[in-house]
Image (cartoon, rainbow over all chains, first blue to last red; front, side, top):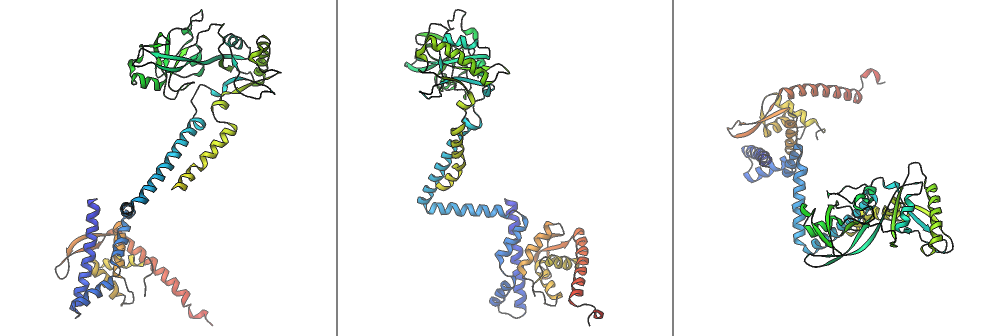
Length: 349
Length: 110
């Protein structure tokens, strides 16, 4: 900036000298000094305009003007604190609202969690004309084995919750632990941040799960301060000491965003309802697979009619993308929200 | 009479072709040599000088004025000299053409 200042000063001096010369000339021609000076100034024209035009040629005047404007603006804000606070608040609100809206839209619409080939994941559903609902149909452990045996199904996994009490720490704390089948992480295709995920060998041949636990990122941050030595430590969950084998990355929140995942035992007599999802074999269409599911569902309904809607039902496969990623009505309303979020911000201001 | 836009640069170059001069001397020279027909607002000389400096057509250096006073002198560079001759011939062509249009050769007027 000193170089800029030097150049400015030199220009000012140059112009000053010019006016001095003209004044002296006028005096020499016989004018009284005061008149001589004002005549010289008249002849020169607008001094500050000439200076500004000259500096404009240098090409950085816009920066100088920007600086002047900023100073002027700040001075204005200081003089009217009430307006300044209201303006700041509206800006904060507007920006905050847009940001939070965008983060939801980013997670749901633009970059949903990158499970492996999410468009190939399907959730079996049962709909009935009398009880219209298009939720997942829940299966039992025994039925999961039957799903895996369907010719169109390549692989199937299941998830359920289990209220879990954490003890042995400062104070007991209860969580919803997430039970997943041994193939769950392989099915989703997500790598751990630390350690390893639950693997099929974590379920013993008899169906008993190994006492291991995989931590959600937030749980790890909160209980282990994000320390790497969490791996291998013991957590007492429902009175069973379990070894921490892995930590998942921050955005992985399969059925929980603050707890942990446990291997699901395969006691076939267990009647807990499970949320099952499947991947189809290559070349198997949704319609073919739906027929196979319907066949299975009809058989299961004959055995356990209480698990199915009364008076007939239809079987469907819902694409995972349609469940987790916004689609249809949800998608259009999110898009609607997204488009005016900028204008709502400017309205606030 | 006002100056045509852009001609001031040419006039400054022409003035400096006679030798280095400071701002006030340039303004006076243009005025006296145009027999005071052209009124150069002295202020408008300075943006023109900055333009020419930026294009490398002239140089500025400190020097002594006639009455032994310090002032900034402007001097034509080789590039400025080339530009001056180019612009001068362009200007001649232009003014000849305008002259023809405004006063057609006598043979064509009946």
